[in-house]
Image 1 (tube, helix red, strand yellow):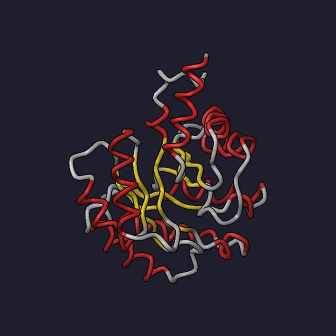
Image 2: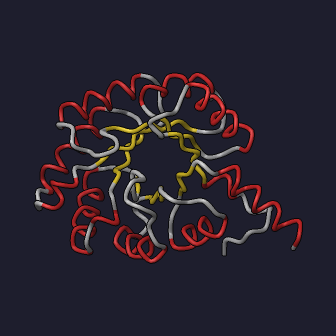
Length: 226
């Protein structure tokens, strides 16, 4: 079981994130330095900063992800495809594509399959699908997860971060649907070590947060006092 003990490599589950609209190049440089220093699994940046992150982390452990159709997913499919191809050409490890929530609510799952499928076929890097899990009912979660299983994405990301944090029980439910066929990245509202550990125990593979350093420091402090 995952614990707070410092020998647990918690950093390997964390993807340090800098997607706030006011982010600057200096913010990205700082985040990439932290990711390298603490050996986080990855960073996730806005497309405009993807080339900078790729340059800074060249031949380093952290991978570089960027987002497509972020944060609402309401761009047209051709726009998302172009954005994905441009980002892939700039050398990112992977893409996180915001799904059209209106299409889910309308039951237009074929449209989601076609949109994601075009991107998966067009790029050679990893492709993840971003949902807003809090806005989807059980049936919608089931259907969109099945689409993602079929279309070839590598993981589901629970949120773009604007609909609030997800609960561990939500991750347990999603893991039951996906079994071990796709990864789960939880994002949004992860501020403490306890939250991180509960989400990992529920079945998450990766944690997207801007507070990775603080979480590791909390783990280290608890290890010293254990």
